[in-house]
Image (cartoon, rainbow, N blue to C red; front, side):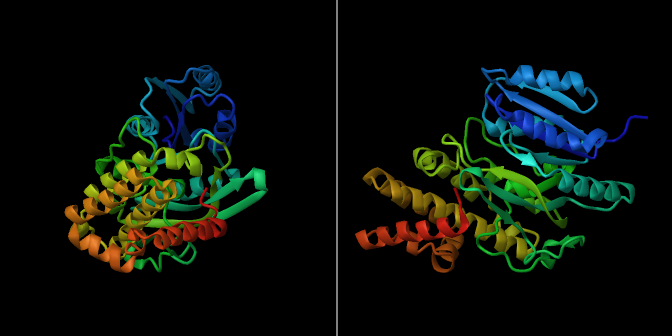
Length: 341
């Protein structure tokens, strides 16, 4: 009888020949309990060839899916559609897993599967890896969730504004992810924010493992979180923020704690968009900032009111020269403390 896959790891790859091996090798630690989907998103280098070599070597673990280029969201959608594992995890091709942490996660999933425990979401730590500065910063959730305990959202504690649950921290039950109706936009950057936002209301039971599973590499000049790149792609950030505004069905969130958290996440998206528009400084960008806030106000006046009054939103709408300088300075200080990019 074929062994049930406990975890599907989807690795979206686009021209990843120089670093994808590391990501794949760390996921292989899961052995027969892991399904690794290498999704080649129309690469023009040797990505597909490398993937096929791994598939040939590990035919019971690795599958390569070749598709036309559609962007990161399209590759993740493809992974969700083809996944057979009980849980689903995205591993970007320039990142990697901590091997011992992956073993801990798989032991948990095995326990959940064996005992038919209802569990929709596994949360783990992730680590910002900045080799150029020899810096490693672990993002944990010890102050928010009791580790190793099956919880509901209403049992969560305080969410710090710097402790958002990014894609790197999340592992959804595959059937929950599909039931949420998640469909990430194609040819669009920053779709990971939608992945970490929209399906959460479909996840009723969760557990937090205090282990540094995901290693998030920061340092490539062309990386999407590079500050210069983000300013150049600000329209993509705005697009994602508007999609999240449209999706935020505030009144139908099943938990008050989750409702407040999602409101905080949306606030952070408004902050990021506003800050980079201000840092660009052009008249066009400042108009885009005003238009974004008006979009939120028109779509949901109540959410606009809450964010403007309680979540720094009022400060981010400053128009004077001094006010714009305050926004830039505040971002610089926070970035030095928390190393956003």
